[in-house]
Length: 303
Image 1 (cartoon, rainbow, N blue to C red):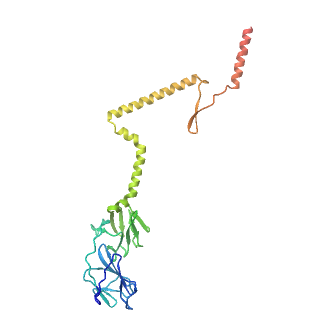
Image 2 (cartoon, one colour; image 1 turned 90 degrees about the vertical axis):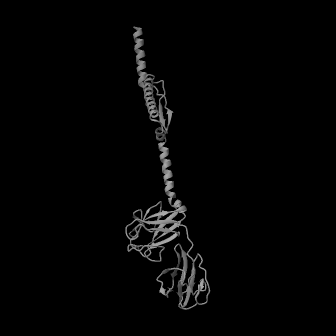
Image 3 (spheres, rainbow, N blue to C red; image 1 turned 180 degrees about the vertical axis):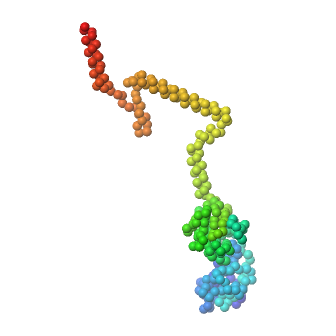
């Protein structure tokens, strides 16, 4: 509510912009006010006002450095005009993910609830998750929920952002419940609800594919393992007997083949399938021997 003319302004979900420009939601037409001077937004932790001006603004007489939380009764001064803030607590949003602190220090044991699909982490008070630690940059990283799961994006921090012990360059997808380190603070990130299903989908698909591949190669092993010890012993004994009989038959077949040389067809492998080979023709030496034997026989008969 304006303390100048008593008018009231509603803060929509998209935010309320104050400034000199006629397109602003709240127009303050004085020269010391920037075209877009400030914006009031609603987030998971309540309402906040962010300064976007050259000349600044104040809340309850204190200059706002960058952003400030608002509570009922706060007096906001923009240029020469003052507004009193009246609002109930921001509507509660569902918890989308959690950040559980695992490192030692003043934050040890704390858990942060992530209620916005875009959440900023850093040492500055303008962040959604404020980490009061010297190893954390003012604007260190942000968590973002996308169609295929959660991502962490490094905002050009000094000490880096790590996922699973590895420093990321730019951004990285958060799968399952990975270790997430921001500066020197280590977290366990856990998505909840539908977001947990999206983040774990690739893992589930990979696990299903591995199980399918393993099942294709281990079907016989599983079948044997399901038998009782007595049945398994009989099965193995039968298999051994079958292999011995097969070896015997093969040896016998080989002997018969040698004794019937010239009467059996040989079998070869060509192009991945068995094919009959051509029958061997008698050689020239064979016919010379036959003719010589016949000549000797005739000579002996004529004597």
